[in-house]
Image 1: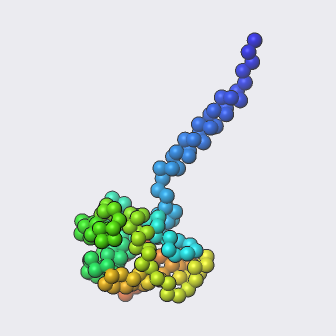
Image 2 (image 1 turned 120 degrees about the horizontal axis):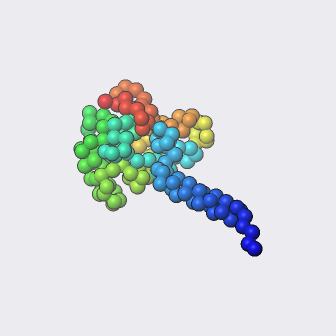
Image 3 (image 1 turned 90 degrees about the horizontal axis):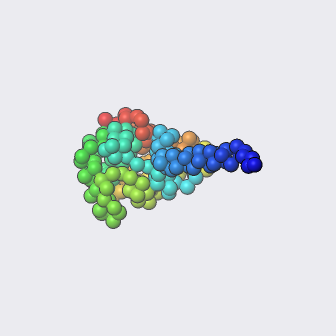
Length: 175
């Protein structure tokens, strides 16, 4: 006579559920900043942009797109009047030109590789990298510079049209 218990079946069910959950999480965007709704960071600023992405199919009309366009403006690839927070064909084209100039894969998207490369041009101006403290940086472009601020909540912002704009994914105030 064989006595079967529910334990082996329960263990298999639990393992299967855990594996399924792990695989599902693995398909989500890795960016805590995107899920937070802002370009953001904490501690050292060099990696703040390393998990950011914006392109024609991913938050194309946003202040995050506007921040990327400010990078293109600083690199001499857009005029200031073209910084409008709409990641369209010209922004995509100029992003590809910048990627080519920087020697990184040309996707025409401001993807993680591209934002990471751009973050290498951020220079410390003032403030503190400590949690809960303000930090002021300068993006040192080939042609122009602009100021980037990280507030007490770790959210990045930039100056445009006479005011500070939060680098948000679900907000577009730069038009």
